Image (cartoon, rainbow, N blue to C red; front, top):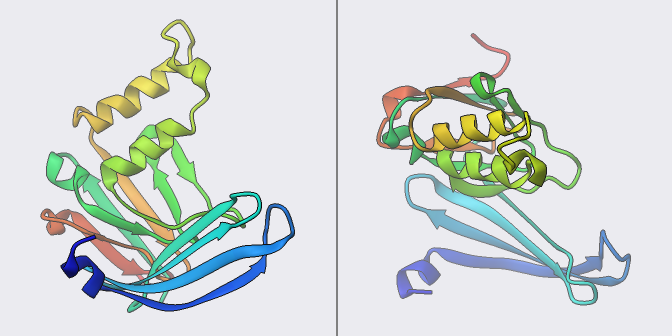
Length: 182
């Protein structure tokens, strides 16, 4: 890690708790504040069990707290490359592709791009859908076309705690509103 990166990362503390996977008191959780370019300060939570290797991480924007709905109109590489902080409490919708991701109790938060979200969706599609003879392969092709910029779509992120955000060069195509307000 470069000096600049370490100057932006501050360890807040570490705690050992029972592991969510094996139950042993061997789950080491570290909390960091990280100053991310374009976003500001974010909280990183990184945990790993010393016994079974179970991992869990989360990330959230520190400066935002009201429920938020973020809408990104994706029709060029600029929007595909927009940076996304998706907290563990956020839901993601891409209506044109029939994608809906709602968080469960162990949902991770992460930093990625709009394109990265599409790759994460592909990672969770059953292997048989990558076989061109399978009818569900149509959905895989739609997502790949979206990654390649051939399909326009809308990315919607709803976060009840307002800890998610999107930033990019095409900021005019990123709409943010507080949930419950119009």
